[in-house]
Image 1: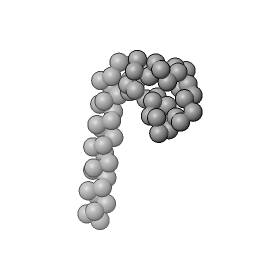
Image 2: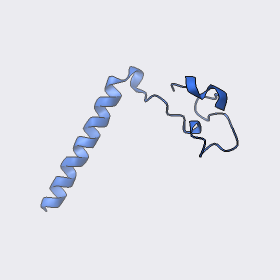
Image 3: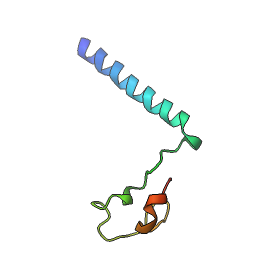
Image 4: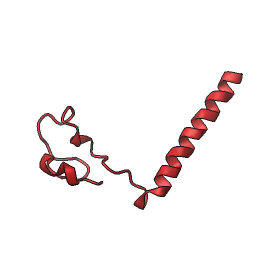
Length: 63
């Protein structure tokens, strides 16, 4: 029972931390969320499915 309580407390702190981070960000968005920026995931040099930028413009991607 003690382990369950400790687990719930730690999960609560994690959710609280993420909530504070989202609240503190402009428009509640995380920066650099384009998974296509990772060359291991984008081996075909396809544009980002989220923002539509090609791989050459990933350094400017903030969405």
